[in-house]
Length: 207
Image 1: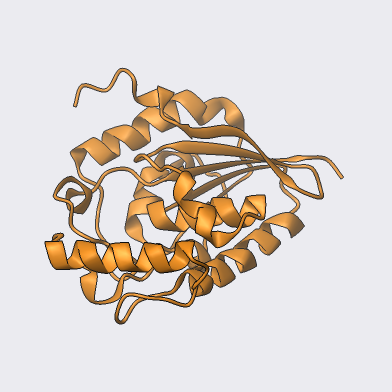
Image 2 (image 1 turned 120 degrees about the vertical axis):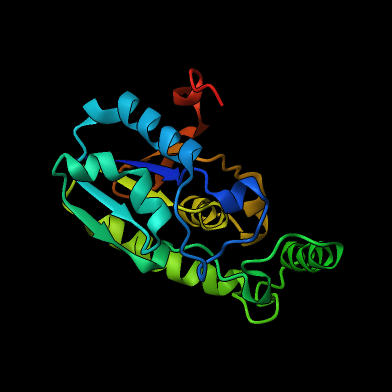
């Protein structure tokens, strides 16, 4: 089997990102002007890669980020398994000290191995990992050898842990800038990371 090259990036900036408002799976926001420019900067750098398929979440911000590739006629599929994590009662709200306390309690529980802990009404680390694992298993079976994937911050942290077969408590190490790129190589057995949260395509943006 030939190796697969998988380019995985986070969506571009939204007004919710800029205002530090929690989005999550239930907030279907659009990119702002900066986010659209980030997506175009990514396209300008990587349009020569000859991607065979584009895979996005079901949320608009991922689809808008890679719209130029889709408009080039590259086959496109939406996969709900790579939607952002469900943040429950925090979605659509600006951070408060109480919300921060909830977040710290959640990540502390996860670091201790309690992956079923969740914010009220939201998703646990285990539930997030379970749906991302479905997506990873799907990736392994695809015929394409060069794939572009666009997902979300927390989902990507968890996705990287799943790809590396790390414990979920270690997902915090995987950083995610808007349109930050992880390039992953699948050799038929395991995933190796070639690029980690690369944002070199944003160097010339004037924001």
